[in-house]
Image (cartoon, rainbow, N blue to C red; front, side, top):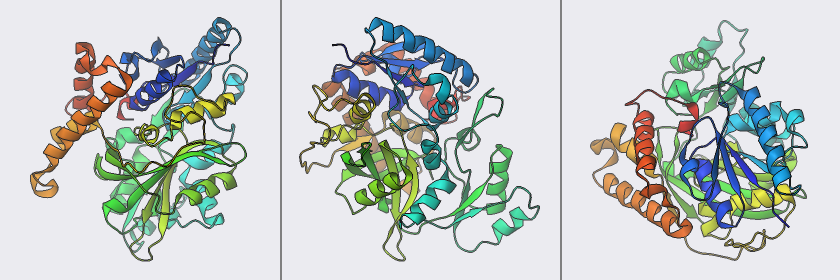
Length: 425
């Protein structure tokens, strides 16, 4: 019997990591996007051109439905699994769930549950109700003309951000992203009046979040997959050792660590919300009381989820299996979802593209030290070599791929105009 195809959208670095993990397991993968991205160059995927997620969200949904029906017919009736690779795609799936229903399978509950996770306000309320510590959060009223002044009066170190980094226009004409206003940063620190004004200029309602005191290495995450019964099927913990852009960017150097006691908290929260599927939940230990406080959650694949497969917890494969109901994933490091064996290795992932962009635009010898360029270069080359050996993927051997990668690096480093919001994911 043929297996359901996986449809990934949009095409970004998370799509590439997902295509490799699924493709190596013998699952056919198609990456959908307005233009070829990293996933399009992988031997494990097929690129399908569609309307742009950001400028034509309704049109891309129609394209997904048409393509899914085509692939269902070609496979003898196996409905494809649709896997969003960023929050904008998640919100589009939520908005058009009725249109997509029956044409694709989803690796998470819908509709309504995902929005409770990607919206910081509802996520923090759910965490507090579940007894999980969070930093203080202040919602600013749009109707309060003194809201900016009240924001400045908040004591302590705070940052401004939108409740969700993406927003679909009411008429479904486009998707707006906060990341374009900040160059990829997910929040704004410093002068709160200016930070709040920036969030509003970007077209979002601002919220204020207390900054959790403590060193950067206390920022840790849980990558987890839970089934419909709330049972943990796979999990791993990771720590960011560097990020780009600074601050509040994506992981630049990420290492697997032993569980500091937050995995069960993460699972408990997701159960209370009613969520099943995969999720990356980020915590930071507060120096003042020693408690880990929940900062963020991403109910989808992410940049370094491939680290999970290296410790017998293949997150993307788990998402596919949960969507299809399969219990066995062939040719994977974890033969049966949930049967991960103890593994005491602590693999490290370094973003090759992020490292290049960081060195081009953000590296400061006084601040970052003279050893960091060596560490980043060696780590990025090591990541590329490990991926080449693990997936036999000629991505880094293709001149056309290097050309596009160089342009993407220059755009991410703000040395060229940004062409698409998806490229910062």
